[in-house]
Image (cartoon, rainbow, N blue to C red; front, side, top):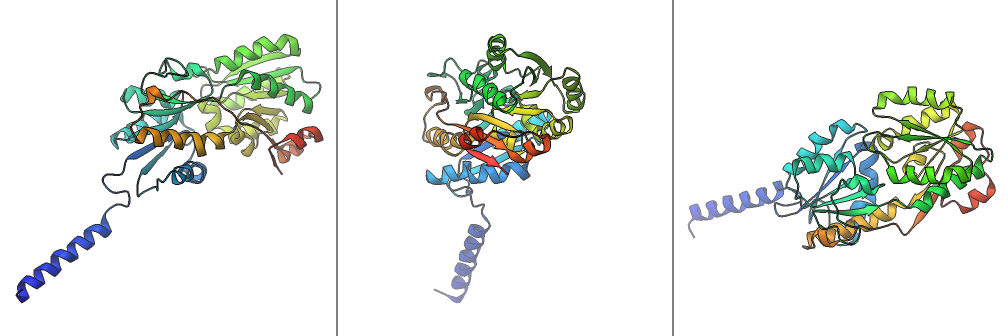
Length: 329
């Protein structure tokens, strides 16, 4: 080989090495897994990286190598969903993981066939995307956190903490109602001797006035429904509840982590760290969402925030502390 040929070979080899080093870690062939959620990157990324990406790693998927996880966060503002959904769909994802309600609706208004794994508090918020729990039949599957028995259990726990509880406010969202939870509360109210006050909140700016109305109605506690707006504004809700000295109960532990008093519901870690990665794996291997049954929860957890209890002047009974899966000091 002449000196000129040798030089040209070295240049070509060097260019190939530079090209490999400059290529994205995920590689052109790595499937994109989209995540569209209400939270903020500061709070959401660490949790999803630890649980969801961790669950995928256990199944053999490494982010930016064998898959590319694309996060889009609404930062508590549901009006951002259409733009974020479009950004995700332009990445041609193999599957998107998202809550039901406004985010699922935003995705489906752009693309009817991208596989979606959705997590729902209320079956109605699948928006007709599934035919049945056992055979969804379309391009959407996921999990429903709803358990009617758990609605009554939350009220029982709240009454252990507040024995004189008689007036309960329900923080709802008019365009994303949790109809099944509300129906169960209405069914239980006479036997529990409760006066229910439904408080629909459509925008973040309305929470202050809503809590003023709750106080005027002399509600002793607030049941925070798991709507997109309530989840996105959970820290604000907890702040207002402390300010007005009313207890809060919900089904989501993230509400308690953000300053709420009490939660009892399906283990979000089980869904995020096990069920969602398992369903992503199945879809990436060719299983259709139509053939993946909607999962119902098997593990429930009780979480109590003692810091909030002290701020409200509430003493949490030892019987609840002993049963709690987590106590936030």
